[in-house]
Amino acid sequence: MTAKAILHPSTFILGCALAAAAGAQQFPSRPIRIVVPQSPGGTTDFTARALAPLLAERMGQPVVVDNRAGAGSMVGTDLVAKGTADGYTLLLAPSALTIIPGMYRSVPFDPVHDFAPVSTISSYTNIVVVHPGVPAAGIKELIALARSRPETIHFASGGNGTGPQLTALLFASMAGIRLVHVPYKGGGPATIAVLAGEVQLYFAPMPSTLPFVKAGKLKPLAVTSRRRSPALPDTPSVAEAALLDYDESTWNALFAPARTPAAVVARLNAEVLALLKTREMRERVGSQGADPAGTSPGELAAIVKRDVAKWARVIREAGIQPE
Image (spheres, rainbow, N blue to C red):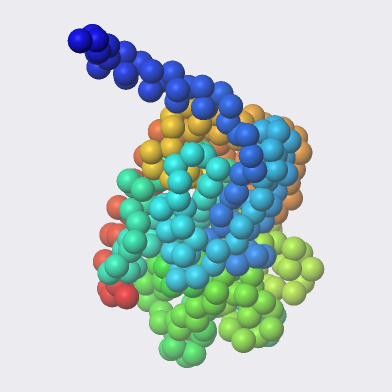
């Protein structure tokens, strides 16, 4: 009888670890896809398109942007959550990712457990903008107008459960006014709606809206961060002008599917952090009124967990019923 070799469990585990390490060293060996769960033209799309070509240069492989809008960002987000965990399909998500669980009764993914955080890419304030025809020169005038005409001021968002919607609803709750929400299929269409006068108000992401403000096509009333933005130094914050405790900023971040090898996540994180230190990437992000904002995977995981809890509380206290 021929003796059979018995593989010791520790040998098997070591072999798997070595194979994973070898795979990570070869990564990437083909194009990488960054899924944007929103329409072209919005802030998240801009961030992805600023990042992709520079990341491609560093990684030595093409990096393509794939817009998959729909269902308040859930279509594209779920695509990545259920994608192959190999680092070749990534998600560039706005902080609205952490709002979704509180807005919907049925969510096909878990922001905390279904993704491997890579790094934040940028952070920015929103601008409270109105169509030039709205008779309000500042945020106090907007509040007075809304109080005198309840439910006649319509505000845009990129869809139910997105950051601009919650940011506006938090403002309305704190100001004691009633606004009418009009959701669009992404930040680009929402911006176009305000430009066209279809709606009067938009708590708009700075990067995608700043060019229209500077061109005089949209009127800025305030920024949503506690402090003024260097991009709009003459525009006060909501806290400064009207509501002392109001403070809300937004981020965009890169994620891989959960169970992506740690070595692959570490490689992606290292390349992103290096990119965010370059003059070219900082200028691309800064030109739109955003700030480069890199983090470790662990730091981003903590941010996601914190914001999921925060927005769940805000939604509950505002009396918003999940859809």
